[in-house]
Image 1 (cartoon, rainbow, N blue to C red):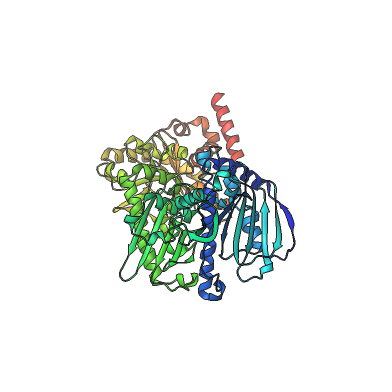
Image 2 (image 1 turned 90 degrees about the vertical axis):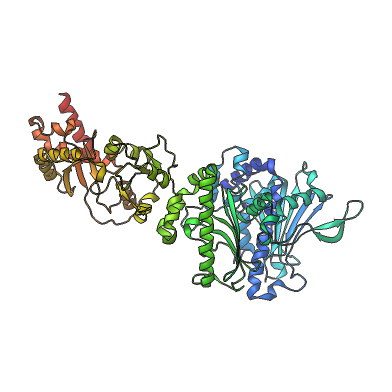
Amino acid sequence: MSTKTGKETLQFETEVTQLLHLMIHSLYSNKEIFLRELISNASDACDRLRFEAISDSTLLGGKNAELKIQVEYDKDEHTITVRDNGIGMDREEVVQNIGTIARSGTREFLGQLTGDQSKDSHLVGQFGVGFYSSFIVAEKVTLTTLKVGLELDQAVRWESEGTGSYTLEDVKKARRGTEIVLHLKKDEDELLSSLRLRSIITKYSDHVPLPIEMREENDKGEPTGSWETVNKASALWARPKSDISDEEYTEFYKHVSHDFAEPLAWVHNRVEGKTEYISLLYIPKQAPFDLFEPNPTHGVKLYVQRVFIMDDAEKLLPRYLRFVRGVIDSNDLPLNISREILQSNKVIDSIRSGSVKKILGLLESLAKNETEKYQEFWPVFGKVLKEGPGEDFANREKIAGLLRFASTHRSDETQGVSLEDYITRMKPGQDKIYYITADSHATANNSPHLEIFRDKEIEVLLLVDRVDEWLMSHLTEYREKPFASIAKGELDLGEISDAQDKKELEEKEKEAQELVRRIEEVLQDKVEAVRVSHRLTTSPACIVLNEHDMALYMQHLMKQAGHELPASKPVLEINPEHALVRRMEGEQVEDRFEDWAKILFDQAILAEGGQLQDPAGFVSRLNQLISGIVD
């Protein structure tokens, strides 16, 4: 805990000041969301206290035991106040959670802001900076908070005008929880109305499972001393689906996810029988900023009998579904369940299995019946879903059916080809699903390995995401059709190759036998073997990796990251009909044969996206070769 006391003025970082300015201007057209964000944060604070009170009931206290949120306004002071009696914060937590936005996502957030208000407004919530939406309507914000268990004089007050600095000071507070006072801008008088505030609460926060109270008013429209609950204050997920509108589902998603955008889809499920639970799970439209961080947040909250237990409950869904948001409410778990108990709990295993099937079923439904929505989903979350076959053996085939790829069937880079699409276009006699991995679509699409496939009009999947190498090491077949990399191992086209193809290859091998031997002698330290290729029709040579080797571009990335890789040598395949290779058999290059062989090898490495060990040597040899030809 921080030992600082007294009042101090602290400066925002440059990025924070910029963030506040851009956010305020981006969200002004939807300014009423400030109240939704403050109520959502208050609800989270109450949930956290209720969880802590499971093991220590004294934390709730006597008269202050009922958790609630209160909203009131003061026309004379020109303020709106939002308070809760939740867990509160100490000074250190205020600095960490409120005083700065100096978190890893801030710079990424700034990088994604476009200047388009409608787009930028959707980015704010996912970066956890919804509190700062207060400055859309307020010229100054005062936050006073007391953490549960601390003395009354250990409260902290944070105050800022949302410009370059904020102040922190120690104060007294009568009870635990947090109170936020918005000192409104002069042109925000329309918010100083019970009717206006109630309408915002009903629109955005009716589903919050805690009472949200406002003061009753007399005949003159003046607040009285009595409070009344203005929301339904019931767990939305526990209500019958038929009683919940799409608007309510959408607003609840924004509440649990802190996302300003609408969800792409959701599934609401009640399971009864041996294991009883309710799940309400959402697929977002946009990715959270930490989706590919080493320790991303998991967006599913765990409740037990309507009581919040924990968020970021990573055991509720596998890692490849970490983009899913929502709640799971179990009747069969103990209220004091811990993260450790979650590790090996049969009820959790059952919930996890059922929830995975529901999410995959929802995605299958989108892919089949709402293709436009699935086309929205795939570019955002496709790379994450590709982690699934390696993590979830039981659902490997189902996940594979959801994958989308670019392929030679299409002229653009869009990943829109499913494995079902591919199978329907397979040639008679074709028994494999062919693919190639590369670091870009251009590299894959221009690979010399594709030449024979284009010649025979055989479709090849073009895999260009970094996760694809890992994916294909776990996804070995689909619908009993094995996958085959066209750049690894010996190429066997099976029944697609006719007798004439095989006869021609045998003749080429016989004619080029001496040339192959000589090239192999030059490159013996670099290659496992040299052989005549039946993959190539227009290129002089290509690199062929061993069946279980990692693609060259991935080998380079792994080495850069400091990983040790097992030693292996590729195979060099040559096209003896290419003019460059034929020239190597002539007497005019006899004295430069070694250079020609090395150039052939280096070109093949570059074509695969690999890195040359001696680029300067390659350039020198190439220049000399060109000079010799010109001369």
